[in-house]
Amino acid sequence: MKLSEGVEAAIHCALVLVGMNEGATMPGAALAEQFGVSSSYLLKHLNALVAAGIFESVPGPTGGYRLARAAEDISLLDIVLAVEGPQPAFRCGEIRQRGPAKLPASAYAKPCGINAAMLRAERAYRAALAAERLSDIVAEFRTEGDPRSVAASCVFVARHQRPQKSISTKR
Amino acid sequence: MKLSEGVEAAIHCALVLVGMNEGATMPGAALAEQFGVSSSYLLKHLNALVAAGIFESVPGPTGGYRLARAAEDISLLDIVLAVEGPQPAFRCGEIRQRGPAKLPASAYAKPCGINAAMLRAERAYRAALAAERLSDIVAEFRTEGDPRSVAASCVFVARHQRPQKSISTKR
Image (tube, rainbow over all chains, first blue to last red; front, side, top):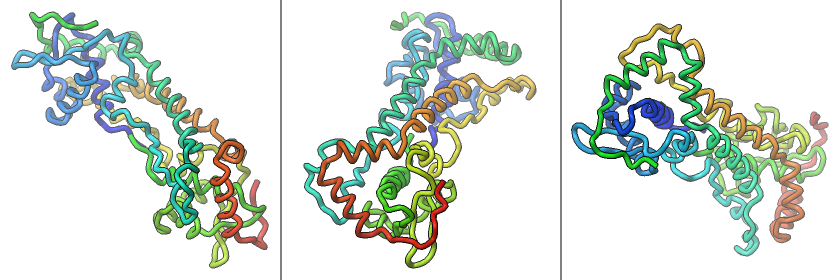
């Protein structure tokens, strides 16, 4: 079982956006170069984050992306679900209904206990992801991260962020 | 993100084996027919469960599979890891090291905070899976499951299980 590589890129992008000035945007191309992925690949995930209400997109050649809400209100679960979609990792194929016995459908009215157990575990996973907020990860990076890495991130944001006249709709 | 279909089949097979007489084995072909999967497909997962010490295999035309340890000592985590492998869902690609800044490797000595956060969540998922024991799922099925489904499962086991002269090495 493997989360797509888009999850890693999306989280890194989100953390970069936390560091921008109020209302500024970051061009997708700069993010793509920073994380060594193709622009078209990254665009798909950036747009998924916009669709999920995590990012905002300001169109045009001087536009780019910014957070749609505060970093305290964005969790790793939000980002994972935006990139991976809402389905759980375990998808019950009702294989209990296969086989030669051919019971009527009413024999399967109650959900399969295996599915119930796997979904309990999934809820624990999602709760743990929901507890990981962007604001906390950024704060830890700024205090615990290698100073050269922190400085390089700061320089990147300063170099590429674009001030915007439009007011962010950030809640 | 999706667990492979082999996980569903493997868990169902394990639950069937809980219901057998002491020391008896279940032929793989019967399990494959019961869950509507090809024998060759299922064999791969049954062998993974043997390799992981969850199942035992008695070779030969009158052999088959049985649990290698008590149902109380087998969790859904054991089965998921046997089928899916040990790697976590999030695999850090160190994309923080990409980009034009080209910091020395020493700047990345500490693990990436994103990887750390994702692994914390993974540990919660695995802990929840580890709390789901086969014995509990079977007990719930026997008391809460549709009586027709419970009866059909019982009939299946009675019909296909094979007594064995060899002593099970079950711990």
